Length: 450
Ligand SMILES: [Zn+2]
Ligand SMILES: [Zn+2]
Image 1 (cartoon, protein in one colour):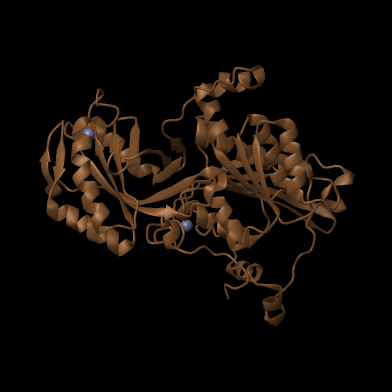
Image 2 (image 1 turned 30 degrees about the horizontal axis):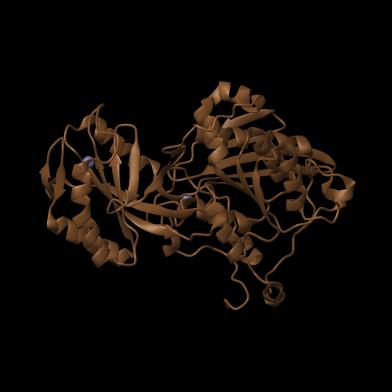
């Protein structure tokens, strides 16, 4: 089923208009495709800049119907053409008793618009939506098939989730008691990707399997070696030499045989592997590599696929542990990104994206891969905080913080507010935000891409 992701704050304004304004209100968004990767059969679009229609653009505006001036429609069409975008036309059904769905008036009014935009912007996909104070219905413009709208921000709202397939077995009973059948259904339906199946990634995979996540994609290019056995949850000495994703897949399927689990044993910074992430609804970044962090960071904002990035570090000086730290950061519209947090080292990203030959030719390249100290409990603290953050974003499980710092020496977890930096190249409207396929990702091109 097709999904279309909106910035959550823009949808919140529309719900607010439906609740507070007696007449119908309209908003226009510009729609970019988000590479159909075929992952789990999903097609996706992202909506850039959903803007309420200005007062003077209404030709007629009543509680039952609304029409826009032809000058405005033409201006919208020209803007879309310049951006290479399709159109999303939303209108409200006002009040607490507004019709929760499309009306016959909507059907009739939509067909001329579908002809108009379909003719002028032939290559693009266009959508129509009805917004009530609490719900949103979306379909392809011209009374076409329904699509699933998502509001993506510090929380993720997926409209129209059907909790009908009850987890009638007792397996999830204690969770259903915490976040309801709807919350459990959301966990079953959501497509989750984990990048990195090492010390933190193996923990995340296990926790998600126990929670009842229905669809999981695991990406890691590495194999298990003996020095990994101290911290890869679920490994045995017999796993040395196997791909990390294969070991993690075996573990999650043993925990939850109903799960669909795909694995990719390659590096996420390669262009074709990064594209696999675009079919996910949520990403966990469990990697030490700066380049893969840069990829995940940009996908989160460019494709409105929220991510949680995490990092752990133990510093040893003169034979003593000086610090034990962890960081858990959600990356999603409305939240500052890794660039805003000064969490990406541009030089390091550049080196990691180089081929072996390019590195040999680069006089400044430093190979600094000295094994870092790592212990399991630190990974456990940080990953459990990350999974709790994921639950709070998706199910209403409590927890507002979207950036956490763990200090193991003081045994303290501290939340931090990190607003997006104005003009940020990744997370602002001037940057990659909601550009979809219209922008490139910081990836390594395959052979033949130069
Ligand atoms: Zn209507
Ligand atoms: Zn930013």
